[in-house]
Image (cartoon, rainbow, N blue to C red; front, side, top):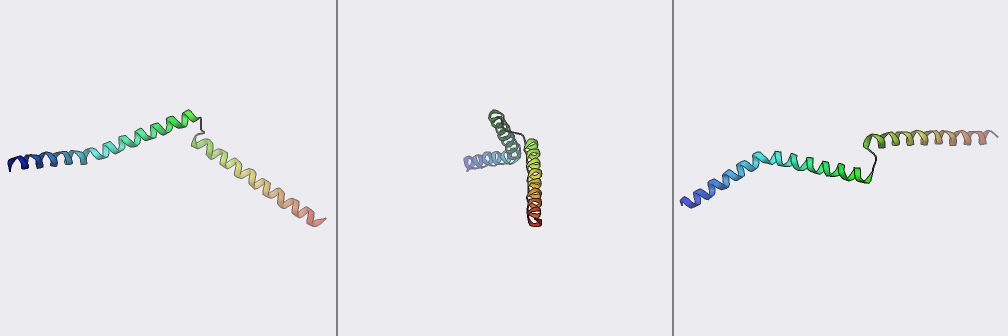
Amino acid sequence: MSKSRFVFDKFAKVIEQGLINYKDVSDEVISILKSKRDEIVFKMKLASKEEVDILNKRISNIEKKLEEKKKRKKISKAKK
């Protein structure tokens, strides 16, 4: 009986420490994964998020200008 109590006490202690350390471990795993992701992105020489956002805005502006020119061209053809 005392051996089983000893086992249960040890098991409870491990679980208690695990619950306390779970958040620390999960934060550490997340930070490791983020650093690995950043390392891979750097090696692949991909653009940063800010650069991608800027490029997306430029593309949308160009698409708007193109649509306006198409509309103007249709209007000028209709008048002729």
